Image (cartoon, rainbow, N blue to C red; front, side):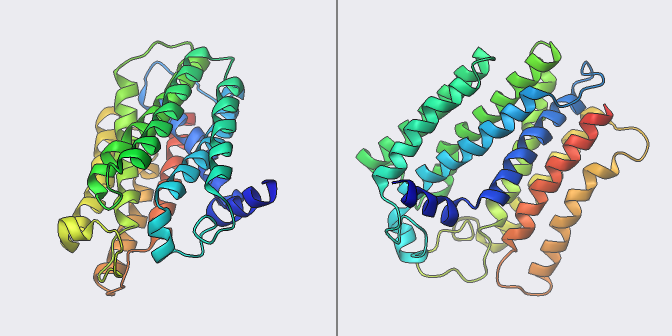
Length: 292
């Protein structure tokens, strides 16, 4: 089983970029809470932030396992090289991985019982979603909008997990700034979700929001979300000096990718550009949080 799981990690969850994303998410969003909350003077990452980064790295691996189980039939048609679709790992292997991770992560966060409880809820919800999909075939994996809504609580609970850690590290109480910060990062994440599925000509059976909103509508949503995220951030923080440029820097990646897709007539929106947008956004949140 260890060999099979190693193949799964190599093929579906490349360790280096996956770890980079988890660390950027944990440190960046925690920095965002500090940047938006005026009570968080002289915030700095601590051991709790490192634990959160490790937790997200494992958590995202578990979510990848669930996604691959859910999308097995789709991957067999369009991505036959993925480990599960190619038979390099078994569904039972991924279920064992998920159960082991779901038991490990609350223990890793035992120093913050509230955070451990939020994690347990998020992992339980993920298991419930995949169980309902398996037994009732609901929601249909081809219904992108419904699937987005059903999976949204997973992302929301992970942001809430980071917020609980931020509150413990700073000794603050929950407040409106936390909700605003989560709204900012959720809007930023919408860009990645939509942009990576933008294509002028979908392959047979390919899932894309273009089939629902049209090409222009999907591009508009993918661009409007990061703009709304930045407007919301600037509206509540009004960073001094030239630090506001750090907020706008990620948007330049969206504009360049949009120009290349729309004016250079590329067939697909660059998924790498969409991923880098979110990573740079996380980095800008961290910088602004350290400056708070």
